[in-house]
Image (tube, rainbow, N blue to C red; front, side, top):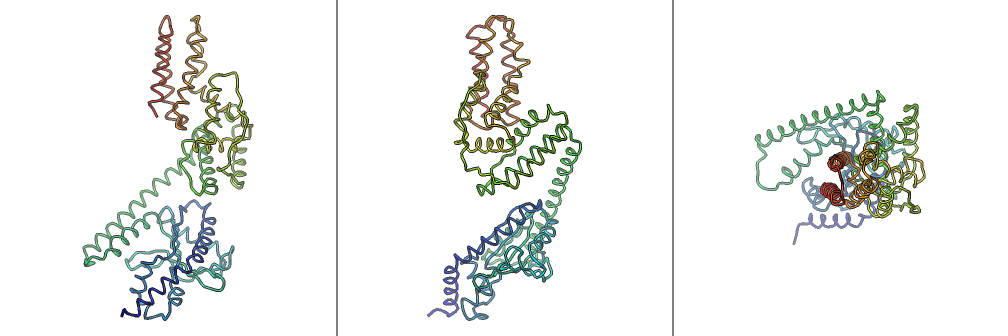
Length: 444
């Protein structure tokens, strides 16, 4: 006959599993409110959340002697302070205070959520609290009322470093059931690790602040680099927020943002009489887009078309083949079309034209073979070969700055070698094209 305490533990686990759908609903409700509240705060990174697991519940019942203090499984769950756990992660240790005060902004003076009065958080306790390991942590108790039942939750606020340390300590020390004395040596080593991580936190913060200061300095000058930096940051921020809202995930878009900013700068700023006015227009555009819905799942619909430029036509045909099939290209074009309020056709032509101008540098290229009787055929062959080589790569990486610069060098060196020949026959031209094509494809 087993001890009655284990019957109570089994009943509590059954009760937990029986109410899992309710707990999952409450968890999502709390997560959504907190996530939406912190989305625009720069100190915030992410939120981790969970419902108490079976093994963890068993351990807590035994360790805290709940089987003595409470008579039923319902009593245990009603008094389990961390039935639902929410961990708000911020960048640095110094940001924890900021996040705590920002959290208070979601609730009224009595601790009830302004968006949903069923959600209550107790801000009366002194924060941060001292843990058993001697370190401070923001640990705030609360609950959510669901059809008359009080479902307890615990909110914690941790920096990346403190979250990392707590995971180390939890998994290596508290979850280690081998017979090891928690002596002064282990305690001192853990304290040393904590102190070193605190130093790393300070160093990372210094690096972050330095980057921020340099960005502000560039923007204040409103020089060319500052404008492009502003555009790239705005595009990347817009993409990140909208992709998370639309898809639930976000892929790295920084390099594509860099090319988009270059594209916009060349087309809309270089020819502008007052770049500052144009910058304000784009700022207003980004602000407007930030409150509009943007769906990355929708197909891009347009009628395929052609121009009188063979390079552009080859790329247009390629874009048509990938625009709704390659997700990297798809999100790039979605961002391009929503940011630049132009017809899709105009944007596609301008985009392909920019690649043509960057890679072939027409003012230079068009002067190389004019002395030869077959100059037009040579030029067209090289142009078609370069466009075809880009298509053969079949990657969005072709528009990344470092790759464009490398391809420009490849094209320029091979074309100049061809130009040095007094007479250019078909074999010379084919060898030049082959070297360019192989070198470009080899890059990817």
